[in-house]
Image (cartoon, rainbow, N blue to C red; front, side, top):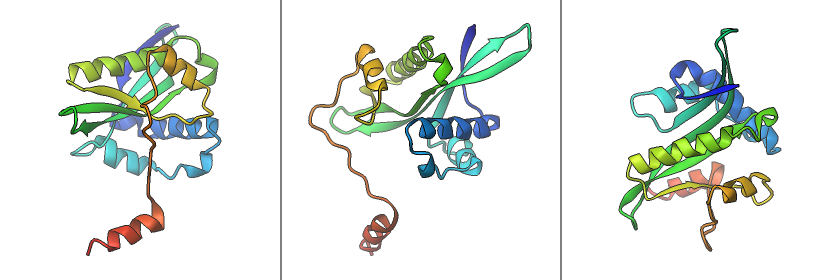
Length: 166
């Protein structure tokens, strides 16, 4: 097994969507994925990319085969308190039959390097309370962000609030 990490390119958009769907299925949330290949092309590979992705490939040069076995999709946010950017991991996925091979660790380590090289204050992610991957993140040295709780607004409530801006 030779695992190589590489940045995703536009030609990978369908593969990204497949991995995103697999991640959602693993979290019993397949019905929530609305993204399309066109969305990923526009937002990841357009003139102003809104996200970046790193792919892990199992490479077999003798067979001329490259199988994508992992994904880390991320973007940069900004900490006004730190006065520096943060790297936020939106999605981290490794094929179930490849977990335990160190692929997730390599993906997160590569993003940690990108964060350090980019002058980021933090590398962040959010995880569901029932996600077994929490132990993995803790082994990497990640800690829960104190008493911070995530909030979100979407769909009709978001449009209603936006209409109030007029």
